[in-house]
Each structure stands twice: as structure tokens, then as C-alpha cells.
Length: 290
Length: 335
Image (cartoon, rainbow over all chains, first blue to last red; front, side):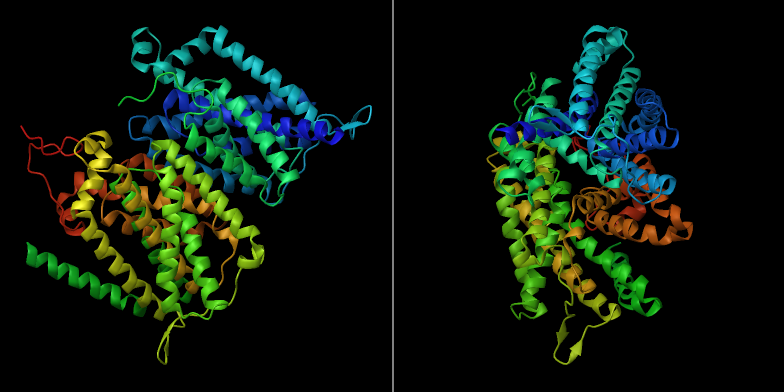
């Protein structure tokens, strides 16, 4: 029972990281109808910037994350201006190729700036473990859960309550109608890209004390995609639920079935979902036209 | 016109035949061999993504299945290379049928994501099925083929083996593109539902295209394994699939000449810009972005639009529209 609870906390924390990654993929897919292969690279870049603001500059944690977010806003804007905007009218596959180019660039760029060796990052809490009775929790897992819930609440507030957030939602739903209402579609898509980049960056910083910061972090992209597929592209809640399911599947699959195939469980579940319920748990409300 | 084209084709073939004589560096020769191997994989991708318009990101899985089948058959089962080559193609094709049957019902990005999932699972199997694949150690010491007493030991000799196989597969892909089946695939790309209402089983056509692409990738995998002489699971990862897709899209989707241009360009480009030392892979990434933005239809697509005369020479059976007729999805609707 104790083990079950501890595993669940660890699974939930990984799940929330996948949820953040998945949400960042979902935002771009929803607004622009494309899958961004550079999302994993943006996440990795966030983690690397985090190592500088935390380790080199030695800033307090929240200040460090704030600085990282500001840098990510700039990167997100540049990314959408240079890689997405010129390709907005061509087929989605070409943007995938541009994303691949950015991915290759970023991987080598961070190695030039930060070196090829993996970097360790100090965790948010300096205690070794959090004990409640007989239960031991990894502090970073608990912090990931707390911070992600806060971020997701802020994100929800941004999308549902602020006018900019509502405008981005409108553009995601119907570009033509939105532009007829006087909403600038390119600006709102830029805002969505920035939003998505920031989410990816936060996911990168949060996960970095758990793993070392290295270019291997780009592979979180695949888990984020699995979260989106399982949760469904229909609603912003989809990737979050999907991410948590992926986190639980892989943690429990690795513990009770086979640790070598840790990564396979999530993908098997994703494929099962694609076979049985291809639109995920939360279906798209407007189905594709026949 | 036709005569001129035949002469150019013959000159081109002669150039391909004497190419190894002009290359002095063994390393560069290996890169050229590699481009040919990549060319075969990308040609396979053309069936499913180019003609039928379905996104497949599992090409590395089939490439790996081909490489491992060939490696295991030659090292532990005592097969010769010539026997292992077709077997590895067929095993990859069976894998393609297995993966394609359920996933090809999916559309667009969903298909892409499903094939990514399968690719990851296959690469984990390579890594963890240690009794068969020797896990992360990989399989070393794969021998080069021989005919009688003649051994294709160097990269220079092996070039001809790959070249001949690639040319056979190229001719096959031209024949398939302009067959009834090829036209069916093009129809599916343009409008799947309309094609189905004409009484064509789109799913089985896509299945055939998918397994053909797996066959090509499997053959390429076998060639790769014996070219390099060593395979390990870290070669067959998602990264490789996207670089195949990259070669494919940069070359030009749906054209016969596209895969050739794309695979050679993307394989050789890092070597050409290697003088930039530490920066060359970063610059390579940027070049890919620039190529994608500058040529959304790929290099051959751009040629068709702006250099129709050159395009007619490199693309077999190219139809260049007369003035006033639109090409594209509404092609030949006429005025």
C-alpha cells in the first residue's frame, strides 16, 4: 500500500510533466493545425536556460523561472516568426520539416553553448525527502505536482477569462470568423506559439532536477504526443488527462511488468487508443468533413 | 526529344558507373554508398507518403528490421548475403503488413503519430530482446558479399551492388507509379472518399503501398548492415525516421526524381559544410529550415514550376502542361 502511494505520486509528477508538454503541443495543433516537432527542443532549451539562471547566476528559484519565461517568450516569438509564419499557407508536412531543422539546430546549438556533458540542476527544495508517517516522497515530485497545478490554473484563467486568451481560442476555432470580428489572426497565432513555448520551457525546468539536463530531453516530445492522442485533441483538458494516464501507465508498467520496456507501455496504450478510440477521450467537437 | 532523352540517360548511367574512379577518399565513397542506401528507403517512402499521401514515420523500423534480419541470418544462420537480402526485404514487408493493417485506417497526423509509436516500440525491441539482437552491444563483423571468388570488400566495389539494386528498385517504382495501381494511389491522395465511391478499396491499396515501402526499407537495411559491417539499436531511433522524411520532403513529394535529389543532398550536405567544424550540424539545421521555407513543394516541385525544361529531363514521363492549363489538384480540368 505504501509503495502504491509512493509510486502514484511519482507517476503523477511525471504525468504532469507530460501534461504540460502535451498541452504545449495541443495549443499549436489547435490553433495552427500542425504538429511541431521542435516542441521537445524548446522544452530542452527551457531546461538549459534554467541551468544558467539557477546554477550560474544563482538566482532564487522563482526569479530564475521568471527570467527563463521571459527568454522563452522571445524565443517563442522568433520561432513562430521564422519557422511557422513563412509556411502558414503550405501543407502541414513542410512545417514538420522546418521543425525538424529547428530541432537539429537547437540540439547542436545548446551543445556549443553549454557543452556536451549532461548538467545537473539543484532542486527547488533542498530537503532529501518529504516524510509523512511512513511515506517518503521525492521532494521534486511533490513540487512538480504543486507547480503544474498552479500553472494549469493560470493557463485556464488566461484562456477563459482574459480577452487575449479568448481571442486565441476564437482563432483556433474559426480563423475566418475571427478575422471578420476584427481579431488579428497572425498576432493571435503568435501569442499561441509564445504561450506554448513558455509551457514547454516550464516543463523542461520542472523535469530537469529529476533527470540530468541533456539533449535527450527532446524525446519528451513523443510522450507529449502520446498524451495528446490518449486525451484527445478536442479539449484543453484532454492532454492533461492523457499526460496523467501516460505517467501512470509507464510508472506502473515499469514497476510491475518490465522495466526495460518502460517507454513502450505508453506507446502501446496510445496505439490501443488510436485503434479503438482514435479521437481520444475528449473528442473533437467538429469532426472532419467528409 | 525522345532520342535526346535516351542519350542523356545513357550519359548519366555512364557517369554513375565511373563515379568510384573519380573518388579518391574511402570515406567519401562510403558516404556516397550511404546516400544510395538512403535513396532506397526514401523511394519506398514515396509510395506511401508521396503517391498515396499518408504520413509514415515508421520507415526506420522497417530499415532496422531489414538490417537485423540480414545480420542475424548471416552471422548465426549461415546464410549468404544474396540469400539474406530478399529475406530481409520480405520480413520487413511482413512487419509492414502487421503495422499497416490497423494504422492505415487512421487519417493524417493520427497516422503519423501511430507510426511513431510503432517505430519506438520496434526500437525498444531491438534494444531489449538481447538473445536475438545482442542488445546495446550490437552485432559486429558483418561480412561483405561475394560472387564466386570475387569479393565486394571495399566501399568502391560494394557501390556497384547497391547501385544495381537501387536502379532495379527505381525502375520498379517508375513502373508502379504509371501503372493502374499507381494512379489509384494518386487518386487516394487527391480525394480518398471520391476514390472509394468509384469502387476502389482504398484501405487495401494503402496497405500495398505501405508494405512496398517496408520492402524497400528492408532491402536498404540489409545493404546498410553489410556496408557498415556493424549495427546497434541506437541507429534505429525516431531521429532517423524524421531524417528520412526530411530527405523525402526536401527532394519533392510524389516525384520520381525527388527521393534521389533529396537523399543525396541531405546525406552529402553535412560533409560539404564540415569545414565549419563545430558549427556544421547547427548550420545544417538552419539550412533545412531555409530549404523547407524556400521550397514548400521540394526541389523537384520548384523545378517543375520554374525550370520546366530541366524538369522534363530529370522526371521520367513528365507531362509539362501547356500554357493556360492549371496543374495541381484541379489539373487538366481545362478551360
